[in-house]
Amino acid sequence: MIASVDRLFTVRLRRDPLGVQRTGTGMSGNGADLGQVLAMLGDVLTGLRGVREEIRALDRRMDQLSRRMDQLESRVEGLASQVAAYHGAVVGHGVLISELDTRLSRVEQHLELPPHA
Image (tube, rainbow, N blue to C red; front, top):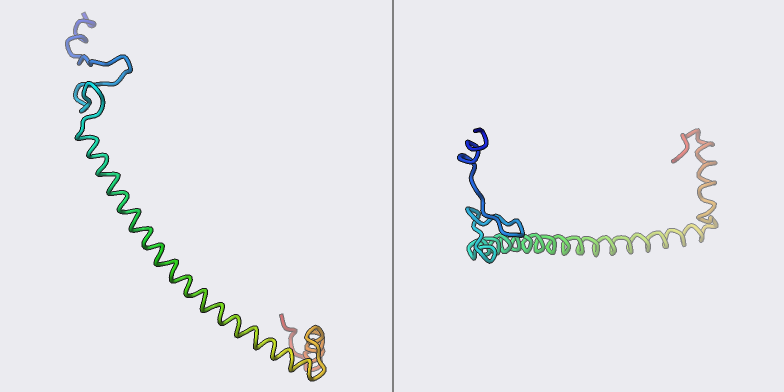
């Protein structure tokens, strides 16, 4: 008796040999409905628009970073020229840069200053 009651309240599903349920899911006999395909394409296009906006934002950010890098390069070049000028002045007074750290340590000890880092 239970088996017959189960058959009364069980919804029969029509399935094709591949196991695709066709009733109530928007599937037609030969695949997805055109409405579903259009909806999926709309979702893809919406996602594509979002990706395009993100790429544009990244392009703007890359342009900003490129300008900052150019500024930093010019500042580093200026710093390098100042170091070269200082080095020339120190060598001109008879002190080599390689000996400067040793001399500075002796001056700190003489003046009883804490050592530099």
